[in-house]
Image (cartoon, rainbow, N blue to C red; front, side, top):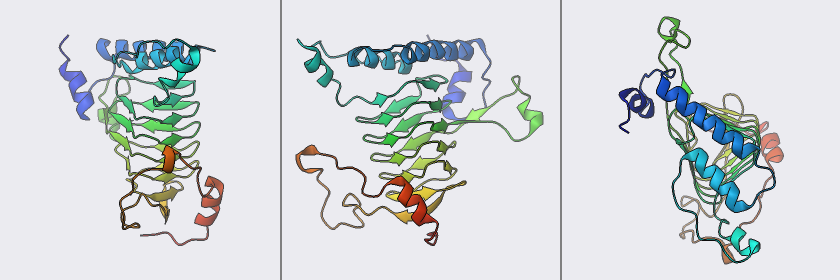
Length: 247
């Protein structure tokens, strides 16, 4: 079925109307898909992946089943892991890379595309708000007026602390770290820690991944093993209180 001009405007980040029958139905579909995922209970990794792809409307075929449950679970080792409950507006505008972990109570207002790069970790109660509204109440008009959105892009190897809020139009660069409870209103450079409301840069992440810090090219972890975080989030937050804010 041909996409309506109104839906195309939504995806482009232009003013559109959210309470048309088409978009009301799309949100209802996603709501029910999320409910099935959130209430699935103790099911196999295969079934959970199937339910997740139903939310995203991802039609990629699942791999053929393996002979044993253990072998079958391994087939999905690189798929994103999303702890229920999770809530979204549309689902089809959320894209997660490999080995992404999303903790419980995540909210995705995916008016526009929300992408999260591989190996990124997201704490509990994190919200991604790609939707926004006109400031002028004459234009806003409650449910009768138009709204709009801006894409959110989270790079690979990021870490977003619990209760953080990512606002419309934000891009977080590779290896970026967002302190717990922060509200991110502006782009975050690669390998940078931001903390606060609004979130501000407090330090750089020291890592071999950063080409500006390492003369040799990063080639991955030995034996493909990912070490734990070098500095706990709580310590980063404490240090930010005594460090000068970087420009």
